[in-house]
Length: 381
Image 1: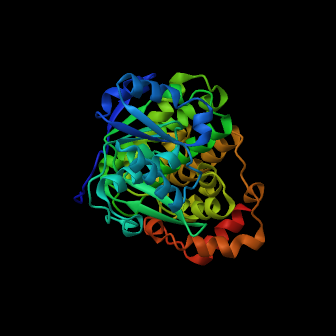
Image 2 (image 1 turned 120 degrees about the vertical axis):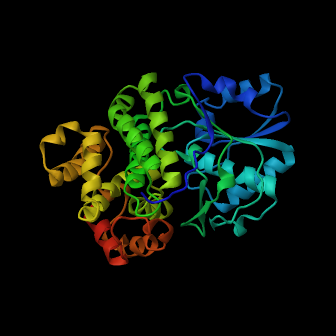
């Protein structure tokens, strides 16, 4: 067995109603709560604000985070924190608010500039205390040291550094109850992609990430249909949150790959939600990787659909693809890029943007060239 390093990430508090403990987990002083207008409009911030204020914390809410947050939004969040004299940061919402909260906590604590920390292991300073509270079971951002920023209007850049790990992740299904079915579906598939790509990552795959990815995929595939069908099912939603978190810990150590690389341009140029972008590209990238990852896909296929055990390895691997397509269809997710406004005239642009994601593509089980990317987008039209 090859040697490996592993980071378990934040401490976790997981139960229905866990948000009530938020005040006790934050240090004395002013708290910057980072979220978005959608989450705030649903009233999901109120339990957090009440818990913080009951503990004597002064709370400043920054709710101007957009999907695919820009560098300008990061800087505006930092300025809000400075003006408030924030001594800690809470990120509450989906992946975008949590990504922004991680960077705000780091930039406020370290004094570094945003431009100086893009890439891997460039952020080496100290951040403010940070707690992350997901309101969707999908991104796993609360588990990772990764933040994604949109620059120049469409290009995605990542900051990947250990100081971005939160102190605590709070998993509370009360905050996900009643989310629209399409959001539950897309974010759930996103989490499944994290588990799948971690398990098959060409770099840094290890026994601990494998174990977490396997448990995550079993939880997610067993509960996603129920969570989509019945938004009030707290048991299914708590299982989805845990699965998403475990997948996040897995891919924080064994990174994601081609599906994400091809998903990012769809978000940057067509504003397709990240989870849906992954769902749209997933079967096509898996088919591209089939020969290189056959044994691993067969193992994953049995995790998602145990009935595949009667088939050979090829059938089990292909069965994974079909099972994932069935889940997406049952959850009413679109399966063609045409449904999100993409047509043949966009293929060259998408391929040229995808090939820039070398941070992700180097993790893919099979090489993906620009020509491959164009072919995969075309197959998904």
